[in-house]
Amino acid sequence: MTSEANESLATGSSSGCPAPVGVTVKTTIERGDAYLSPEIYNVEITLLEVVRGKKARERINSQDVSDQPPQTGFDYVLALVRFGYYQRGRRQGSEAYRLTEGQFAAVSADGKQEYELPSISQQPQPSLIGRLFNPGESHEGWILLQVPDEEKEPRLVFKRKHTEGMYGIWGYVWFQLY
Picture: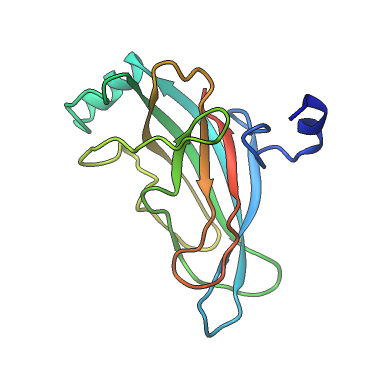
């Protein structure tokens, strides 16, 4: 893909046009089940900070998140993310939304390789994973990931897929994880 083609893409819409640290990406997700019309909610995601390597290990060790090093040939990466979940339009949707493990993932710069999540007992605090969002709420929290040592420009993706029913918007939201 040429740089001219990348310029026409919306920030955060692909691995070739990831949102930089500090830039908020606004998107939508659908909620519902097979028997009701889906409700659409607005989501705002900002990658606030990225910590990698030795500094990440120091923070992980200070919180007793893991006493294990990352996989051989990998670095730990801590991502501080602000996630906001909002009603859309005049509908008074009231369905809560829980971020689950695996909805945020580290991937290669070309977007073709998703890296395995590290095996840990808990996420660093404050954690974003497992947090329940009611419409109108925004929270910040850490996510622990791992990437190969040689991966210089990894990406962070948010998987918008809807896991509770048949409706969903399936595209990823992309961020620079460096």
